[in-house]
Image (tube, rainbow, N blue to C red; front, side, top):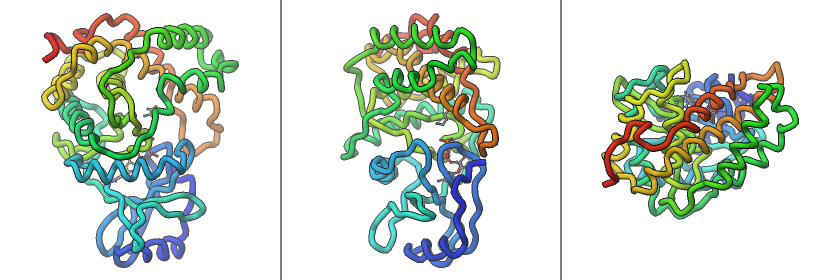
Length: 324
Ligand SMILES: Nc1ncnc2c1ncn2[C@@H]1O[C@H](COP(=O)(O)OP(=O)(O)OP(=O)(O)O)[C@@H](O)[C@H]1O
Ligand SMILES: N[C@@H](CCO)C(=O)O
Protein backbone atom coordinates (compact mmCIF):
# COMPACT_ATOMS: atom_id res chain seq x y z
CA UNK A 1 0.00 0.00 0.00
CA UNK A 2 1.11 3.51 -0.66
CA UNK A 3 1.16 5.43 2.58
CA UNK A 4 4.78 6.48 2.61
CA UNK A 5 4.33 9.21 5.22
CA UNK A 6 2.22 8.77 8.36
CA UNK A 7 0.25 11.82 9.50
CA UNK A 8 -0.76 12.19 13.18
CA UNK A 9 -4.30 13.10 14.37
CA UNK A 10 -3.33 16.37 16.01
CA UNK A 11 -1.12 17.42 13.16
CA UNK A 12 -3.95 16.82 10.68
CA UNK A 13 -6.53 18.60 12.86
CA UNK A 14 -4.37 21.73 12.96
CA UNK A 15 -3.70 21.45 9.21
CA UNK A 16 -7.46 21.24 8.50
CA UNK A 17 -8.07 24.20 10.82
CA UNK A 18 -6.13 26.38 8.34
CA UNK A 19 -8.90 25.73 5.76
CA UNK A 20 -12.54 26.74 5.88
CA UNK A 21 -13.66 23.12 6.00
CA UNK A 22 -15.19 22.83 9.47
CA UNK A 23 -14.01 20.10 11.85
CA UNK A 24 -11.92 17.04 11.09
CA UNK A 25 -14.23 14.03 11.55
CA UNK A 26 -12.03 11.12 10.41
CA UNK A 27 -9.24 10.18 8.01
CA UNK A 28 -7.75 7.06 6.53
CA UNK A 29 -4.73 6.19 4.37
CA UNK A 30 -5.51 4.98 0.83
CA UNK A 31 -3.77 1.77 -0.23
CA UNK A 32 -3.93 2.36 -3.99
CA UNK A 33 -1.43 4.35 -6.02
CA UNK A 34 2.33 4.04 -6.13
CA UNK A 35 3.68 7.55 -6.44
CA UNK A 36 2.31 9.64 -3.56
CA UNK A 37 0.73 9.27 -0.12
CA UNK A 38 -3.05 9.80 -0.21
CA UNK A 39 -5.51 10.07 2.67
CA UNK A 40 -9.25 10.38 2.51
CA UNK A 41 -10.20 13.09 4.99
CA UNK A 42 -13.78 13.63 6.19
CA UNK A 43 -14.60 17.07 7.56
CA UNK A 44 -17.94 18.56 8.49
CA UNK A 45 -17.97 20.03 4.94
CA UNK A 46 -17.57 16.65 3.22
CA UNK A 47 -14.86 14.30 1.98
CA UNK A 48 -11.51 15.51 0.57
CA UNK A 49 -8.28 13.91 -0.61
CA UNK A 50 -5.05 14.91 1.11
CA UNK A 51 -1.98 14.17 -1.03
CA UNK A 52 1.56 14.28 0.33
CA UNK A 53 4.00 14.48 -2.58
CA UNK A 54 6.74 11.86 -2.66
CA UNK A 55 9.16 10.21 -5.06
CA UNK A 56 9.07 11.51 -8.63
CA UNK A 57 7.11 14.71 -7.96
CA UNK A 58 9.35 17.79 -7.97
CA UNK A 59 8.16 20.47 -5.54
CA UNK A 60 8.87 23.12 -8.20
CA UNK A 61 6.27 21.48 -10.48
CA UNK A 62 3.44 21.55 -7.93
CA UNK A 63 2.11 25.01 -8.92
CA UNK A 64 1.78 23.66 -12.49
CA UNK A 65 -0.20 20.55 -11.43
CA UNK A 66 -2.45 22.33 -8.97
CA UNK A 67 -3.01 25.32 -11.27
CA UNK A 68 -3.82 22.94 -14.12
CA UNK A 69 -6.48 21.09 -12.10
CA UNK A 70 -8.08 24.44 -11.24
CA UNK A 71 -7.92 25.56 -14.88
CA UNK A 72 -9.39 22.31 -16.20
CA UNK A 73 -12.17 22.25 -13.60
CA UNK A 74 -13.08 25.81 -14.67
CA UNK A 75 -13.16 24.66 -18.29
CA UNK A 76 -15.58 21.77 -17.93
CA UNK A 77 -13.21 18.86 -17.19
CA UNK A 78 -14.34 16.84 -14.16
CA UNK A 79 -11.22 16.48 -12.06
CA UNK A 80 -10.22 17.16 -8.46
CA UNK A 81 -10.11 20.85 -7.60
CA UNK A 82 -7.45 22.03 -5.15
CA UNK A 83 -8.88 23.65 -2.02
CA UNK A 84 -7.42 27.00 -0.95
CA UNK A 85 -6.57 27.67 2.69
CA UNK A 86 -7.42 30.79 4.70
CA UNK A 87 -4.45 32.58 3.03
CA UNK A 88 -5.64 31.62 -0.46
CA UNK A 89 -2.86 29.04 -0.95
CA UNK A 90 -3.54 25.69 -2.61
CA UNK A 91 -0.15 24.21 -1.62
CA UNK A 92 0.96 23.58 1.96
CA UNK A 93 3.13 21.23 4.02
CA UNK A 94 2.41 18.45 6.50
CA UNK A 95 4.68 15.85 8.14
CA UNK A 96 7.67 17.36 6.36
CA UNK A 97 6.22 16.90 2.87
CA UNK A 98 4.61 19.30 0.40
CA UNK A 99 0.87 18.61 0.49
CA UNK A 100 -2.45 19.68 -1.01
CA UNK A 101 -6.11 19.05 -0.33
CA UNK A 102 -8.33 18.40 -3.34
CA UNK A 103 -12.03 17.70 -3.77
CA UNK A 104 -13.16 14.07 -3.64
CA UNK A 105 -14.44 12.49 -6.88
CA UNK A 106 -17.08 9.78 -6.69
CA UNK A 107 -16.66 6.67 -8.83
CA UNK A 108 -14.48 3.61 -9.33
CA UNK A 109 -11.81 2.75 -11.81
CA UNK A 110 -12.65 -0.12 -14.11
CA UNK A 111 -10.57 -3.29 -13.92
CA UNK A 112 -11.85 -4.61 -17.26
CA UNK A 113 -12.52 -1.73 -19.62
CA UNK A 114 -15.01 -2.34 -22.43
CA UNK A 115 -15.16 -0.60 -25.80
CA UNK A 116 -17.83 1.71 -24.32
CA UNK A 117 -15.42 2.75 -21.55
CA UNK A 118 -12.69 3.34 -24.17
CA UNK A 119 -15.03 5.57 -26.20
CA UNK A 120 -15.82 7.63 -23.09
CA UNK A 121 -12.11 7.97 -22.24
CA UNK A 122 -11.32 9.02 -25.80
CA UNK A 123 -13.88 11.82 -25.55
CA UNK A 124 -12.65 12.86 -22.11
CA UNK A 125 -9.03 13.01 -23.30
CA UNK A 126 -9.99 15.27 -26.21
CA UNK A 127 -12.01 17.46 -23.82
CA UNK A 128 -8.96 17.66 -21.57
CA UNK A 129 -6.81 18.73 -24.54
CA UNK A 130 -9.27 21.47 -25.48
CA UNK A 131 -9.83 22.44 -21.83
CA UNK A 132 -6.07 22.89 -21.33
CA UNK A 133 -5.91 25.63 -23.97
CA UNK A 134 -5.11 28.99 -22.43
CA UNK A 135 -3.50 27.54 -19.27
CA UNK A 136 -0.73 30.00 -18.42
CA UNK A 137 2.01 27.75 -16.95
CA UNK A 138 4.28 25.39 -18.87
CA UNK A 139 6.09 22.22 -17.92
CA UNK A 140 8.22 20.27 -20.35
CA UNK A 141 7.86 16.49 -20.45
CA UNK A 142 10.64 15.15 -18.24
CA UNK A 143 9.72 11.63 -19.42
CA UNK A 144 9.66 12.56 -23.12
CA UNK A 145 12.17 11.66 -25.85
CA UNK A 146 15.06 13.62 -24.28
CA UNK A 147 14.53 11.93 -20.91
CA UNK A 148 14.45 8.31 -22.11
CA UNK A 149 18.16 7.69 -22.71
CA UNK A 150 19.34 9.24 -19.40
CA UNK A 151 16.74 7.13 -17.58
CA UNK A 152 17.90 4.00 -19.42
CA UNK A 153 21.52 4.74 -18.57
CA UNK A 154 20.63 4.63 -14.87
CA UNK A 155 19.91 0.88 -15.11
CA UNK A 156 21.52 -0.19 -18.44
CA UNK A 157 24.18 -2.37 -16.78
CA UNK A 158 21.41 -4.34 -14.97
CA UNK A 159 18.85 -4.64 -17.79
CA UNK A 160 19.87 -8.28 -18.31
CA UNK A 161 18.44 -9.11 -14.86
CA UNK A 162 14.98 -8.49 -16.35
CA UNK A 163 15.44 -10.26 -19.69
CA UNK A 164 18.59 -11.36 -21.54
CA UNK A 165 17.91 -9.36 -24.72
CA UNK A 166 16.34 -6.29 -23.09
CA UNK A 167 19.39 -4.02 -23.37
CA UNK A 168 19.68 -4.63 -27.11
CA UNK A 169 15.96 -4.04 -27.67
CA UNK A 170 16.04 -0.75 -25.76
CA UNK A 171 19.24 0.49 -27.38
CA UNK A 172 18.02 -0.24 -30.91
CA UNK A 173 14.60 1.24 -30.22
CA UNK A 174 16.01 4.41 -28.62
CA UNK A 175 18.26 4.96 -31.64
CA UNK A 176 15.28 4.48 -33.97
CA UNK A 177 13.03 6.82 -31.99
CA UNK A 178 15.76 9.47 -31.79
CA UNK A 179 16.13 9.35 -35.56
CA UNK A 180 12.43 9.29 -36.46
CA UNK A 181 10.54 11.09 -33.68
CA UNK A 182 7.85 13.30 -35.22
CA UNK A 183 8.35 17.04 -34.78
CA UNK A 184 5.94 19.95 -34.99
CA UNK A 185 2.71 18.11 -34.14
CA UNK A 186 -0.04 20.18 -32.47
CA UNK A 187 0.92 20.50 -28.82
CA UNK A 188 -0.66 21.58 -25.58
CA UNK A 189 -1.31 20.29 -22.08
CA UNK A 190 -1.33 16.49 -21.88
CA UNK A 191 -2.21 14.18 -18.97
CA UNK A 192 0.62 11.78 -19.90
CA UNK A 193 -0.56 8.94 -17.61
CA UNK A 194 -4.23 8.38 -18.45
CA UNK A 195 -4.38 4.73 -17.39
CA UNK A 196 -7.55 2.93 -16.23
CA UNK A 197 -6.68 3.60 -12.56
CA UNK A 198 -6.80 7.33 -13.25
CA UNK A 199 -10.31 7.42 -14.72
CA UNK A 200 -13.41 7.00 -12.56
CA UNK A 201 -16.76 5.67 -13.72
CA UNK A 202 -20.16 5.39 -12.09
CA UNK A 203 -21.71 2.54 -14.04
CA UNK A 204 -20.91 3.30 -17.66
CA UNK A 205 -20.75 7.06 -17.09
CA UNK A 206 -17.28 8.57 -16.82
CA UNK A 207 -17.32 10.56 -13.57
CA UNK A 208 -13.85 12.14 -13.61
CA UNK A 209 -10.11 12.05 -14.22
CA UNK A 210 -7.45 12.06 -11.49
CA UNK A 211 -3.69 12.03 -11.01
CA UNK A 212 -2.31 14.93 -13.01
CA UNK A 213 1.19 14.50 -11.62
CA UNK A 214 2.83 13.65 -14.94
CA UNK A 215 0.91 16.34 -16.87
CA UNK A 216 3.06 18.54 -19.08
CA UNK A 217 3.23 20.25 -22.48
CA UNK A 218 3.83 17.89 -25.36
CA UNK A 219 2.26 16.63 -28.61
CA UNK A 220 -1.45 16.04 -27.99
CA UNK A 221 -1.33 12.89 -30.13
CA UNK A 222 1.34 11.44 -27.81
CA UNK A 223 -1.30 11.42 -25.04
CA UNK A 224 -3.55 9.35 -27.32
CA UNK A 225 -0.66 6.95 -27.86
CA UNK A 226 -0.23 6.57 -24.07
CA UNK A 227 -3.91 5.70 -23.70
CA UNK A 228 -3.96 3.27 -26.64
CA UNK A 229 -1.22 1.40 -24.78
CA UNK A 230 -2.99 1.58 -21.44
CA UNK A 231 -6.61 0.84 -22.46
CA UNK A 232 -6.65 -1.24 -25.62
CA UNK A 233 -4.48 -4.28 -24.89
CA UNK A 234 -5.88 -7.48 -23.40
CA UNK A 235 -4.30 -9.47 -20.56
CA UNK A 236 -2.58 -11.70 -23.15
CA UNK A 237 -1.07 -8.46 -24.60
CA UNK A 238 -3.03 -8.70 -27.86
CA UNK A 239 -4.25 -5.37 -29.21
CA UNK A 240 -8.07 -5.09 -29.20
CA UNK A 241 -8.90 -3.15 -32.36
CA UNK A 242 -12.55 -2.74 -31.33
CA UNK A 243 -11.40 -0.85 -28.24
CA UNK A 244 -8.85 1.10 -30.29
CA UNK A 245 -11.53 2.14 -32.73
CA UNK A 246 -13.93 3.12 -29.94
CA UNK A 247 -11.21 5.18 -28.24
CA UNK A 248 -10.10 6.97 -31.42
CA UNK A 249 -13.65 7.65 -32.63
CA UNK A 250 -14.59 8.97 -29.19
CA UNK A 251 -11.56 11.28 -29.31
CA UNK A 252 -12.34 12.46 -32.84
CA UNK A 253 -15.95 13.25 -31.94
CA UNK A 254 -14.49 16.10 -29.90
CA UNK A 255 -11.15 16.88 -31.57
CA UNK A 256 -10.50 15.49 -35.07
CA UNK A 257 -6.90 14.46 -35.73
CA UNK A 258 -4.85 16.05 -38.49
CA UNK A 259 -3.33 13.91 -41.26
CA UNK A 260 0.12 14.32 -39.64
CA UNK A 261 -1.14 13.21 -36.24
CA UNK A 262 -2.71 10.11 -37.80
CA UNK A 263 0.45 9.31 -39.71
CA UNK A 264 2.59 9.70 -36.58
CA UNK A 265 0.50 7.39 -34.38
CA UNK A 266 2.53 4.16 -34.80
CA UNK A 267 5.74 6.02 -33.86
CA UNK A 268 4.10 7.82 -30.96
CA UNK A 269 2.75 4.49 -29.69
CA UNK A 270 6.29 3.03 -29.80
CA UNK A 271 7.56 6.02 -27.84
CA UNK A 272 4.79 5.74 -25.26
CA UNK A 273 5.50 2.01 -24.81
CA UNK A 274 9.20 2.87 -24.35
CA UNK A 275 8.38 5.47 -21.67
CA UNK A 276 6.45 2.96 -19.51
CA UNK A 277 8.94 0.18 -20.22
CA UNK A 278 11.76 2.41 -18.94
CA UNK A 279 10.07 3.67 -15.76
CA UNK A 280 8.84 0.17 -14.93
CA UNK A 281 12.26 -1.40 -15.61
CA UNK A 282 13.94 1.21 -13.40
CA UNK A 283 11.41 0.59 -10.60
CA UNK A 284 11.68 -3.20 -11.04
CA UNK A 285 15.42 -3.04 -10.37
CA UNK A 286 15.35 -0.37 -7.68
CA UNK A 287 12.33 -1.15 -5.50
CA UNK A 288 13.43 -2.81 -2.24
CA UNK A 289 11.94 -6.27 -1.66
CA UNK A 290 10.17 -5.09 1.51
CA UNK A 291 8.71 -1.94 -0.11
CA UNK A 292 5.06 -1.00 0.40
CA UNK A 293 4.24 -1.37 -3.29
CA UNK A 294 5.14 -4.06 -5.80
CA UNK A 295 6.72 -2.73 -8.97
CA UNK A 296 4.74 -3.18 -12.18
CA UNK A 297 5.96 -5.64 -14.79
CA UNK A 298 8.14 -3.97 -17.45
CA UNK A 299 7.79 -6.94 -19.82
CA UNK A 300 4.15 -6.01 -20.51
CA UNK A 301 5.56 -2.98 -22.31
CA UNK A 302 8.13 -5.01 -24.22
CA UNK A 303 5.19 -6.98 -25.65
CA UNK A 304 3.28 -3.81 -26.53
CA UNK A 305 6.39 -2.27 -28.08
CA UNK A 306 6.91 -5.32 -30.29
CA UNK A 307 3.30 -5.02 -31.47
CA UNK A 308 3.74 -1.33 -32.37
CA UNK A 309 6.99 -2.07 -34.21
CA UNK A 310 4.90 -4.06 -36.71
CA UNK A 311 2.19 -1.40 -37.14
CA UNK A 312 2.31 0.59 -40.38
CA UNK A 313 -0.72 2.90 -40.06
CA UNK A 314 -3.39 4.15 -37.69
CA UNK A 315 -5.85 1.81 -39.46
CA UNK A 316 -4.26 -1.01 -37.44
CA UNK A 317 -5.36 0.81 -34.28
CA UNK A 318 -8.92 0.99 -35.64
CA UNK A 319 -9.20 4.33 -37.44
CA UNK A 320 -9.97 4.17 -41.14
CA UNK A 321 -10.64 6.99 -43.56
CA UNK A 322 -9.06 10.33 -44.29
CA UNK A 323 -8.35 13.02 -41.73
CA UNK A 324 -11.23 15.44 -41.41
N1 LIG B 1 -9.80 13.31 -5.98
C1 LIG B 1 -9.98 12.04 -5.66
N2 LIG B 1 -11.20 11.58 -5.36
C2 LIG B 1 -11.39 10.30 -4.97
N3 LIG B 1 -10.41 9.40 -4.82
C3 LIG B 1 -9.16 9.79 -5.10
C4 LIG B 1 -8.87 11.12 -5.54
N4 LIG B 1 -7.54 11.21 -5.73
C5 LIG B 1 -7.02 10.01 -5.42
N5 LIG B 1 -7.98 9.15 -5.05
C6 LIG B 1 -7.80 7.76 -4.60
O1 LIG B 1 -6.44 7.56 -4.31
C7 LIG B 1 -5.91 6.51 -5.16
C8 LIG B 1 -4.49 6.88 -5.57
O2 LIG B 1 -4.49 8.13 -6.25
P1 LIG B 1 -3.44 8.47 -7.40
O3 LIG B 1 -3.66 7.55 -8.56
O4 LIG B 1 -3.50 9.93 -7.64
O5 LIG B 1 -2.12 8.11 -6.63
P2 LIG B 1 -0.64 8.02 -7.06
O6 LIG B 1 0.12 7.56 -5.87
O7 LIG B 1 -0.23 9.31 -7.68
O8 LIG B 1 -0.73 6.82 -8.05
P3 LIG B 1 -0.28 6.38 -9.50
O9 LIG B 1 0.58 7.45 -10.09
O10 LIG B 1 0.35 5.10 -9.22
O11 LIG B 1 -1.58 6.18 -10.27
C9 LIG B 1 -6.88 6.41 -6.31
O12 LIG B 1 -6.93 5.13 -6.88
C10 LIG B 1 -8.20 6.74 -5.61
O13 LIG B 1 -8.69 5.61 -4.95
N1 LIG C 1 0.77 4.26 -15.05
C1 LIG C 1 2.12 3.88 -14.73
C2 LIG C 1 2.44 3.98 -13.27
C3 LIG C 1 2.20 5.30 -12.62
O1 LIG C 1 2.59 6.35 -13.34
C4 LIG C 1 2.39 2.44 -15.17
O2 LIG C 1 1.43 1.67 -15.29
O3 LIG C 1 3.55 2.08 -15.33
